[in-house]
Length: 490
Image 1 (cartoon, helix red, strand yellow):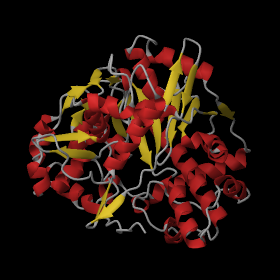
Image 2: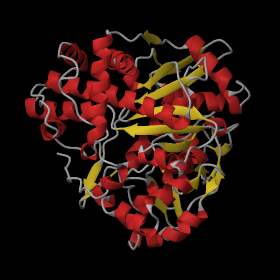
Image 3: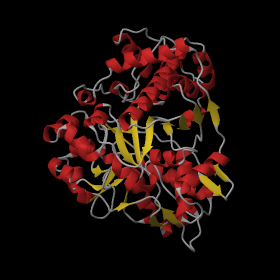
Image 4: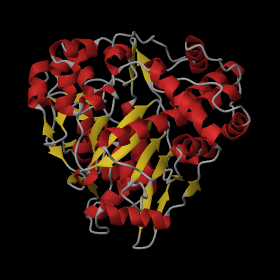
């Protein structure tokens, strides 16, 4: 994505789009990191001369480098099952309440901490001299400079969100070598310049070489930076493969109640804390569409599917969108139907019913996360901002407004890219603080407003459904004891 910025305009253009296909080899699910890097080079070539480049991506996964800086194998995908037993092993040494009090990070079986625990004793980890999180790995290949960006580092479950430095006590107790990590750097810091061979391959100018700027490299941190809020009393939902729902705080909240509710304290721009809950997100619908396309040998277009789903009665089919059984890929419609039946609820039988089940369940999970965030922090909100790809899903946005009983502002859809470029622009003196950045977004980006609909009976139905789902939810400390079926990609 390339952006052009003036004091009154901010435009974003897609320069190049390329696939991201995980690959399974030797019973392990990997990222095809070399194909991704090649796609980035193609994108830089298409974008042409730019003032700055910034890299953001997903969290927790990493590449290992040897003493010569060479990559030791393709990074393992966080949806791989190798971490199934890692949480229990970690908690045997450092109980979950102590771990949360130290790091403020929610339990997720794929956190970097658990990946490193699962990798202990392997030849690959023994040979590693450096660990780079995925955006830092791409930045290293572009610049030759190694660093660990702070917002992404905070998701590893090895950082103290209060001091914003590594938690040496946690690492020492769990046998993790923090020397593997490159020095921490912050959004806005210089990250180097494109290397000569990168300039040659992309055709970008050699004089002066293009600078690379550190951004909030966790894509959710970049997306939250691009929430076009005009008040501090807002909640956000970053929607895409995941839904990340919560509040922006000035300091972490590491209470036992927060741990029990599975809220995380991830760092954002300008020293902020993203106090949020991970929800499975539109991954559920993506996987269903993949299964239907394979089984029916037809690609079900999303818009007709959403129109049909809108005709299905509300709240008839529901699942817990945080259920860990939905984490791996493979036959999602069947697993959703199974989850409904196991909970004693009707099971969807058609694509439209399954789609409505997913969207109602996500809206309900959004409501629960925002209510819990307010309760746990003592904050109140008067508007919900939905950013990311799900902002284009009008049915999901309206259902979220209905479920929360709050107005929803949807957009921008490309929030992560916008947050990325705005941090670069600020580093180069083109914008000021995050409030000015958000004001610019509110003026320049297309936004859609949704008001809650429905009568008292409808509001009661959402409240009753929320109570039923909450009573059946699996506690975070029990998730690790459930073996997640190893569904395989076709």
